[in-house]
Image 1 (cartoon, rainbow, N blue to C red):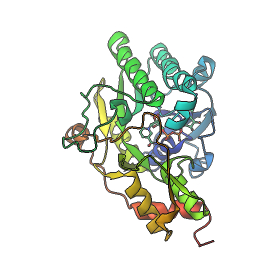
Image 2 (image 1 turned 120 degrees about the vertical axis):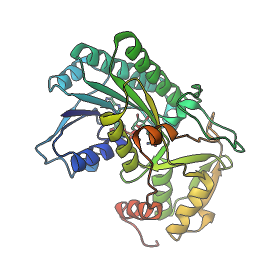
Image 3 (image 1 turned 45 degrees about the vertical axis):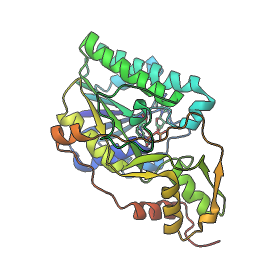
Length: 319
Ligand SMILES: NC(=O)c1ccc[n+]([C@@H]2O[C@H](COP(=O)([O-])OP(=O)(O)OC[C@H]3O[C@@H](n4cnc5c(N)ncnc54)[C@H](O)[C@@H]3O)[C@@H](O)[C@H]2O)c1
């Protein structure tokens, strides 16, 4: 099987490629990526030399680039490619609309034209919006209404709706997954966990938005990759699957824990004005993927992940 992975040089897409290379060596993988600031080819260093791996530089918003990808006749196309940083979306919403909505549309048109066997869209739990901190229910299900708060999550919701419309209108064989926050190696340094580690190791204040009580559900990127693998092989067409681990923690508790693991003082934390429209709490219900596909996220060793990030930043010792 030939699996095309758009956005495969990013944080989660590269975790999926590494997972597939390890568990399905019989498959061919094509990584299709525009190599924006968020890409890191080092995340793919273990597969680059493999004869079943091909890297194609290309932009999902450019039809000619996408046509070049389809000349390799992929059986499955998975779309991880996106502008993914909420803060950047607040500064430059247009780029997010262009990449995340229009780019997904270009991929969908090509899938219809070339009769792809399966298209899978990587989405996010942020499309559901947020919950109050004192919420006691069972979390967002796939049936929950879309209520995005940021230009990022709105653009992802827009892409999801486009995919659903292509399924209904053109009979596209497709599915969607919506994951909670990911952690793991290779994430861009501007995101919360790597940034906290980097700053802590370099003696820089660790900023935290607002009161820091915002709650997120964290899943390891390798587990996200495993879930996507199960969906593209056994998931039903036309379906949406939530991916989460019921591993909720507030931002302030997370940051304090990271500092503790690194042996740094909590006095490094500095509260900064809250992000505009900042979601209070995400809680995703992963019951459907558990019941249908038997996927249950394994708890990964968070402390070891922090230490390996720290080691990759090359500075574990005190200044
Ligand atoms: N990281 C998370 O916590 C998380 C959680 C839920 C869902 N997601 C979703 O997973 C996907 C991947 O997220 P990530 O954290 O790996 O993002 P990332 O920003 O690390 O990587 C995105 C990748 O897409 C590529 N890209 C951007 N624009 C492109 C374009 N026009 N054409 C081709 N490639 C392009 C970038 O070069 C980069 O390699 C996104 O769709 C995101 O919405 C991420």
